[in-house]
Length: 186
Image 1 (cartoon, rainbow, N blue to C red):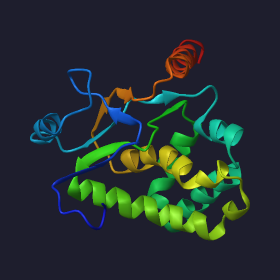
Image 2 (image 1 turned 60 degrees about the vertical axis):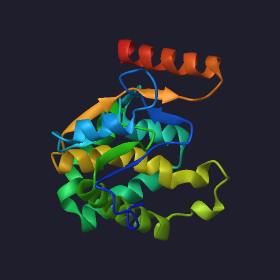
Image 3 (image 1 turned 90 degrees about the vertical axis):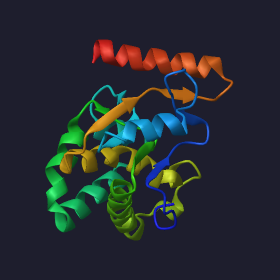
């Protein structure tokens, strides 16, 4: 999409998760166009909250050395983003799920930036030795890096709730409880 679409507005969503519109259904094309008729920013999912920090949360579930490789690349090659990276890494929330809708120019800028970071990590990581789940590091990292790009570039953000199209009500309820407890307890 990044290099191949000529659309004025571009976006990415998850195959089972979509941004929720005003009518509690999937955010419609009309709603997106209306929003961007007078908004120069990005639409993202509402943030998720973690217990300690974004970095600690990553370390608890993934190989933190990959997270640190992203920081190393930013420190050495894109220092403009380092302060925001450290701020996000120590934060207790981030915009997850790799969901983003933006005017084409912003989407393309984000894509160029995120792929530069991920390509560096790919060249240095041992991800080919990881199990199937952990080999998805590029998705896991890009979730945490979206806010780095937003903060560094002072991009206005419109947060939208997420519509989960899973039939597993127990999983959805657990997700809701976890996020509620983390917000309450910190």
